[in-house]
Image 1: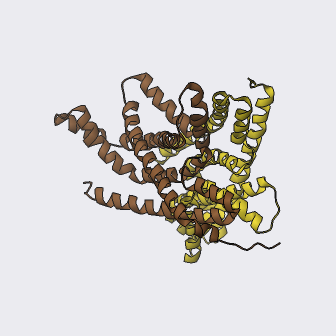
Image 2: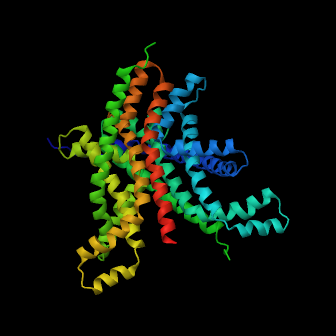
Image 3: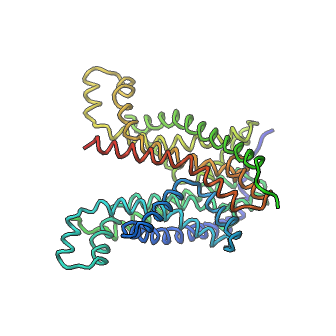
Length: 222
Length: 216
């Protein structure tokens, strides 16, 4: 039996797919922004004087980094309602992406923060800056610049991970693709086209990240 | 309300068996092809470098889930009538070959150039330069990243659940649906993944620290 490829099913529903691409990008941006906030707060908490807080952050990072995203999103979506917390699919997806991306962001940003020379912090103290000012201007800014490449490649991974949100039927590119597949039975054509769309999305994001880097980190280091 | 007894745990363990099997197949197959990718990526012929760069970019720029879907349905289109697990294993092998290829390319390029030049001056041919001089050092340098990818691969096998393959995550979903105890079931499933991945992560971090101290 020979099979002839027929992409008309995909072409007919291209508008639907493009809107779904926007939903995927939206999920990714929400996840990234929250992940960055969690990352910075997590690093602050990890440097706190309270042992319990430090332990909590370490435990959170290890737990998230050593379990699959699929199990995390299942846990939030199916298990938390048992504890009385019921979230809709989109909110679940954003929370799961934020927590997952946040754990990686904490590890990455911490690497950059630890690499800031001690002498610079002491110089800040000598200039009479407060603790918060020192953290913001002397530690965080150069640290974010230093870890920007690894942070953004982690964010590209996070964008690709949004596809897993289809498992709880959140509205994004993969779940729309699955719907089209169910309507047309053109499985290969649909998934092949979607794969290309993801490739375009991740390339676009890499371009934007490069642009942001050139715009905001163009000042000389020394 | 049904409880989680030995039967349910046994079912989870059956799923775990497939999670481990998929990981091992993907890692072994990906290791073999990944080595070829890394060698081609650092080859002298520009066409080989470009082709493998594209291969890596495609696999790193698309979701693993899509790779699973495309291979799963693509293999059927090509007329092969094979078991689902073979299709999934092929997808994981391709995925792993691209990522390991990129990791080991970094390792090969991190070996000082003088080593290759010295080996060539001694009259060693390509095969021997790679096998006896460059690769042993390159693989050592890339060991932490390789372990890191192994953890990523173990977690990645959970996506086979979405294609309908019964590994640990899918087994958890089935048990959860039968017992109406998602909290306990997914906590157990998460714990199993954690107990496998965490020691590997610690090992990777330990190796990385040792390599850093050795390099100083």
